[in-house]
Length: 366
Ligand SMILES: NC(=O)c1ccc[n+]([C@@H]2O[C@H](COP(=O)([O-])OP(=O)(O)OC[C@H]3O[C@@H](n4cnc5c(N)ncnc54)[C@H](OP(=O)(O)O)[C@@H]3O)[C@@H](O)[C@H]2O)c1
Image (tube, rainbow, N blue to C red; front, top):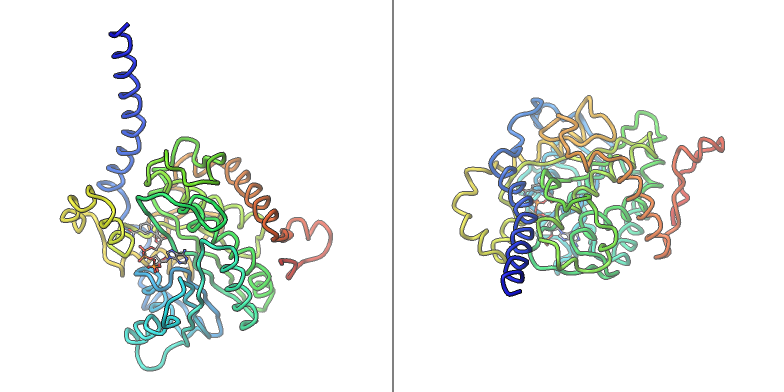
């Protein structure tokens, strides 16, 4: 009897370790063999970004390391305006705007700060309303904000925090900005793009990719890197579905590479393993300048194919089998529609639906 209990305990320990081991192996594989984005199609932001004259651009997480650099590179090419959409700050984002301005020459595109907390539907609604009241068009939306945290938590509406910010908050923001994106797509010479920033870390998602039954709640029983992976599988699926439903918009997902940014600094505070391995990270990471090339290529480059995931720069289809699964992304879209509808946000008709009715809708979102 005692021997049986011991065997059961040992087996369940091993099974538990093996399950974790799979995620650890994925994590180690990504660290050693993952994409730093050094390879891929050549893309030099200084010369290869075309004129962005007249365009309005919005970058979530634009106050973070990658987002800020994306803003700096795009601002060099004369857009009408760039919105830095990031968490509310005491100085209303003035220091972020100043930092971007300092990196540029005297004359550059106007930069505006749009306060948004992607973990709160109310905040997203307010930010989208502010943007829509101020602008007639939206040409490029870079959905870049993101978190990777060891400690678990939930958003204001009770969703798992990484999923809520990295995916669901962006899905709601995009839905509320869709009328602007679709309106802009109808303008002469338009080239409207949504760049959803995923990660090669999507490979660390739990088995099945997205655990729909657990999304409402902190998912404490799932490792933090699996929660992050799940959110990034969702981001890839979101870009694919957005592209399929709104063909007049180019929607893609990208992996930036491994870069030591604010996210890594946050993780170091929380994780002993992260602190211990920190001295090794420079060997596996690239600079911010390299890390933003995929964002920039996807937002402005030639030959960007809608609905694809790119890793490294300009190289499609390297996502995992579960992230490629169209049944999963369709289920995610439907799940999202239901959740947002029950929170009071009406559906936006897809182009397919409207064209079959012989009309094109541009402003049916609430
Ligand atoms: N760095 C990498 O190696 C790497 C690899 C793969 C993918 N990525 C992805 O790249 C994107 C950019 O990350 P990063 O590396 O530049 O990290 P970062 O410096 O931490 O930037 C992330 C930004 O998102 C903002 N943010 C966090 N929570 C938010 C919320 N609730 N609402 C609105 N904004 C929020 C952060 O604001 P605060 O700083 O004020 O919290 C920060 O400005 C993320 O989506 C990340 O998953 C990064």
